[in-house]
Image (cartoon, rainbow, N blue to C red):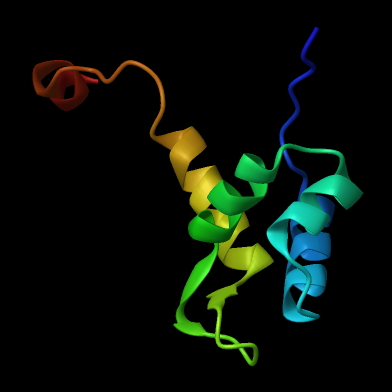
Length: 87
C-alpha cells in the first residue's frame, strides 16, 4: 500500500541544503523517504531562474513553498463572473 504525503517546508529546506551541497536527487529522495520523481518535481517547482554554484538549475525552498501555496489557492471550482459581481 502506498502512503502519500506532502513535503513540508522543513523537507524543502533539507532538499535545498542537500542539493546545494551537490547531492544527487536520487540520494536526496532516499534520505527523505520519497520517490526520486518527487524530488525532480520539487526542484522544478523551486527553480530560481539561474544556475547554482554546481552549475545546476538553482533551487529555493521559499520559491517552492510560495508556488505550492499559490497552487492550493487556485484549486477548486471557480464561480462564474456573474456570481462574483453580485456577491
